Amino acid sequence: MRFFGIKILHDPGFYFTRFVGIAFLCYSFFLTSYAEPVGRLRVVTTIFPAYAVASAVAGDQAIVENLLPAGVGPHDYQLTAGDLRTIQKAQVIVQNGIGLEHWLERAFKSNPTLLTVNLSDGLHDSLIRDPIHAADHHSADETKHHEEGNPHLWLDPKLMIRSTTNVLRAFQKADPTHAAVYASNATVFVQSLQKLDQELSSSLAPLTNRGFVTLHDAFAYFARAYQLKVVGVLETTPDVSPPPRYLGELMRRMRQEKVSVIFAEPNSPKRLAERIAADLKIRVALLDTLESGALKPGEYEAAMRRNATVLIRELGAATP
Ligand SMILES: [Zn+2]
Image (cartoon, rainbow, N blue to C red; front, side, top):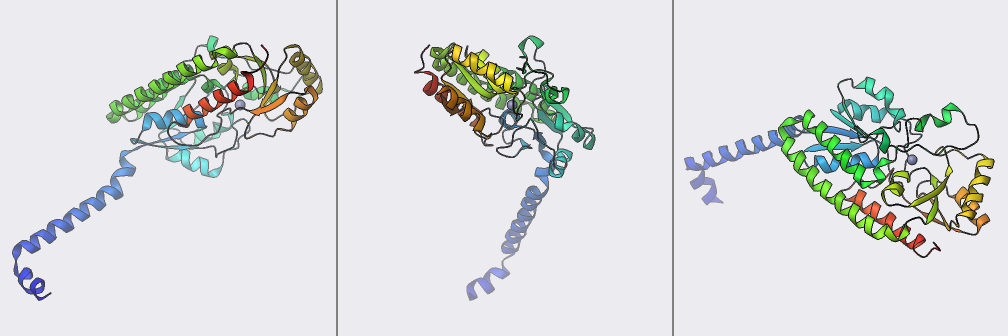
């Protein structure tokens, strides 16, 4: 200790080394404390597919937060005070559009400078599917959520590629300094979506025209993309019990089309599907609408592949 205490304290180089070390520590502290919040674009997304696109384009360059908690559906969502605070901090919001986020309207008043991008922006009318409605009369309020068309376009990876371009343009506009980083990230995601689409086209090809029924009208775009046949849906308005007359007509068509399975959803009650399946002596399985999902890289593609596996298992052995 004497060696360090006396000899080195008299060495001017020791003081210089200490000064440089302390200065470096202060500089590092400044960087970690102040640089990140100022430098990074803040993005808020509404539902899992919007998060999937936004987080893929953002990479490490932007902060992306999703509003809907895990397992919560978008059709009847209520905005919380916490959501409003998240939106107030953001520069960009990525939503699906086509009338899905009707609950978001008051949020735009809380942040008037927010740049809004829709996954559905630029989608030609001819690509937007009409929702299935019950033949019975129902109120305007029941149909308002889908009045602009069927919103579930994220279940077609080709449409997700268009959505990626929409998100890329918005990020480049909001944060032009990092335009090249976002473009590079978007290219990688689009390649992943193209690979997914090719895989699904090939693996689902044997299921063409094998009819099935789903809980709500989420799979119209998916079925169109891969020539699958949705014979009908149990709920013409999500989370609303269908009229008995509608269900009677649906069951008649299910017998006629020899439907062998009803696809319920992981985050919704299965009672109605189970009751009808028992009456018709057919199976119930689960198909993911991807309205909710784990917020991690690659999860959109993984969830789509899980759905394909379920379809092949459930319809692959069915009588054509
Ligand atoms: Zn839905």
